[in-house]
Image (cartoon, helix red, strand yellow):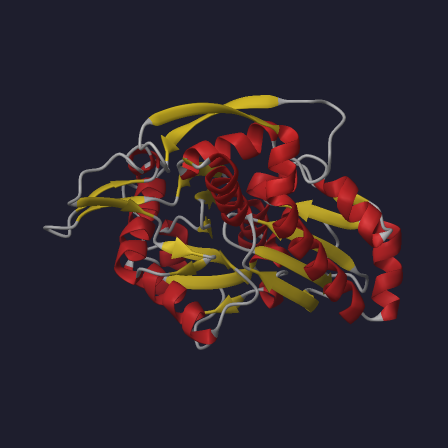
Length: 353
């Protein structure tokens, strides 16, 4: 009886705890939070000064005693206490912006997306952080599985679904059949690594030190995975490493493509290895259905064309790839009875609902 009452009063939510951005999906309401996974901390007092959008504005602009950092690196928790505070902020914000029954609300059930290559220790860290942040029950779902559900792929059927989720910290490559992952690769080469490639290129070629936000802007505006017919250029501002003075140079899309080439090849190599590990019957399905791309990294110009050329299979970017994980986790949450096998639970002794 108490569990049923608690379930009625709680606000169930799905969280995509990403390296770059965190999204929160509330049952029956959709995505209500989409903010950067950045936390600003006062190093003298340990006080959390800002989380999300406000904290991102501080990146690279703080005095020595304030650090604006990401508590997740490569999709896993690097700073447990700060991650816990960030989760608490998102849960409280989602709870206060949602309708409360009779003015009361119980601790929510939470489902969180995690990379498929994480260890049991890293899984426990996510569970514990969510529990300490106020979650009543914690479910974990692997990100490629959540992306496939978000893309409305028939993951529970006896057929092969090939998905590549390129996020901020990790690239998840997986073949899914009968509600489980048959073959997978988790690669720590994704959006952040592409940004770093541009930073390194600017230092090597132009002796110019640029920030991460500048690199990301260049990647989004003129970056590509293949040489493009259209010529694009963009001003790149930073500090000259020789003179120490500010400088602006013009960078072209061909230069950016060359800077990103090595990391793009690593992603394609991971896709090819996963294809080699896929059982022939499922591979036949993949050849028919094609490879599906999700995550922000999938929007890199020409990436789908290059993957299709290298694998000799059709390749498609799913609708709204940036939110696929949280939408898939939300669908799993709303269909918890039928999709319970795709999730792992924090306490196997509890009833699933």
